[in-house]
Image (cartoon, rainbow, N blue to C red):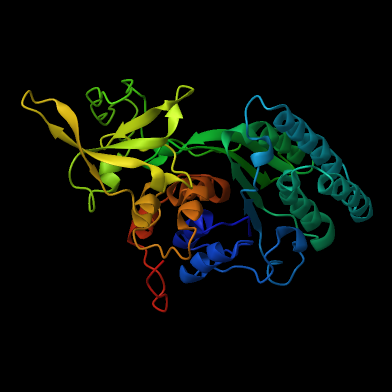
Length: 385
């Protein structure tokens, strides 16, 4: 059961693992993408209007989700920190209920408070807890595993949730994972909570995904129009056994056979004019909903054998943006807001590691990555945006 499911980062990973899934998604264009990909989506669009007892979802034994958390994702923002503390306080109230009647009373009070907040999205992050508690009190069957993910600034919320869940029968923990350390060709960071129903051993350690690739380390500063020589790609470590991180060039080899530099739409180091740069030998920076604004330039050797910036190239296509998120090359993106769908998604390759850890307590099978790479949409799916 995938809440706030998006275009299917978790669901496509579940499907290549052979796990049935169904998602709740509000946005019609995103629902169109899910439908074209053959992913099941609930008839009801609103997470708040559904619950674990509804016929479409009552058989689900795993709960996942990435609730919108923009209201407290800005570091140093007073309103953001207040929202974070409000969520932690209200979460404690929800999990403090001891039966169905008391939970219903508490939920009504919590909902009144969140509905009155200036940013309605603050209450979304409490929805997974509502589903967890209703599964226990109303359905009578708790979820066997829970996975929640969001931007790194949400980690304090997930840590607090883990503590609360340990008090009601789950072994739980939360950590930040680096996407490039799991073979995703970008330096995306996600705060992840994993909880497993285990009333007898709630204090035990929860297995978290173990990195399979090296972390990206920025070697050279790149400023203005000057480009320092790119760092050498890391080699496979004989000590750690970890592979090199996957570069942009490797991910886009089929469409970008020549060396290039990717210039971010965003400034770096606090200077909006200092555009972040990554060469094709490095992983991309985080792919956001505005990745189409990034600019690409050819890298070519001058007479001295040094790399220099050449002519501007076509900007990243939707397919290329999806590949940098580790979606299959033929993922059937639909509608007019495709870039936003891609930028909002959790990378499927990272999802494979997370789901395997949560459901099986081990690393994913190699075959699953092959299935993800080779995945194609259903035969009745039509091509086109």
